[in-house]
Image 1 (spheres, one colour):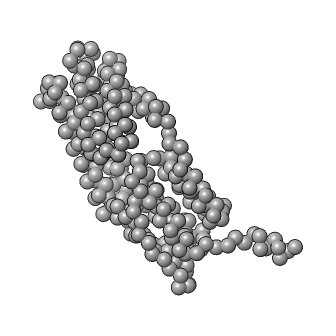
Image 2 (cartoon, one colour; image 1 turned 90 degrees about the vertical axis):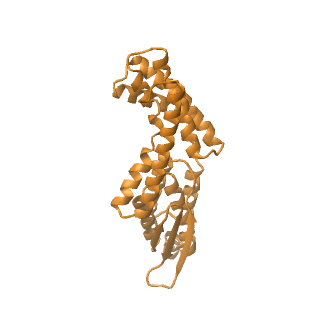
Image 3 (cartoon, one colour; image 1 turned 135 degrees about the horizontal axis):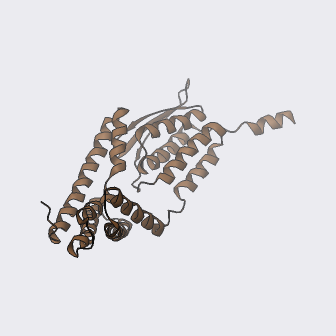
Length: 266
């Protein structure tokens, strides 16, 4: 009986190859969902250490090069994974980080960790209508923070609703994000300019300016700053350039919308 209990309590350790492939998928999703490089590195080291292994990674803008090995042995496996092209999702991001702590603290089996990972990445997405409503309320609140009156808030809410609804539909059709940002900024600016066109309120300029704030790429900018602090300069530069390009697309859509509505850019 004592021998049987010992056998049951000692799980079979996964091979280096299996852990490396698991970490490849894990890191691909984590980075694609908006995690910083330092978070990805810490999570991967935590998971590898729980199975008695070590991992070293080289993070590039579109690929992750990793090597996993078991100390004091000749077992080593190297793999290059492409970063998952998924939208930023803090829910998946958080749950993947929680999984790394669960593996490290609770020492769950490798098979159980794989099952939990699959459930996380295939979990149902947030209700798009609820997201649309919350983004609309949030952007209207930004208008108020910048000094907009009640009418400006209503106009910004309408502009945000129309623009973000268009963004959801275009991204679902796999349209390039740069084109999406330009079109959505154009539509939101035209809707936001109705405050000035019909003299609906006393702060029309604030309504126009805040109608496109939901398109500002704040998360990539913050991630690039974090990557600089932890010396991931290549990823930091890549994310910063992406941010600059998206900001430029936003500006093009904003200027075109103001020109069409004769809102007076200068």
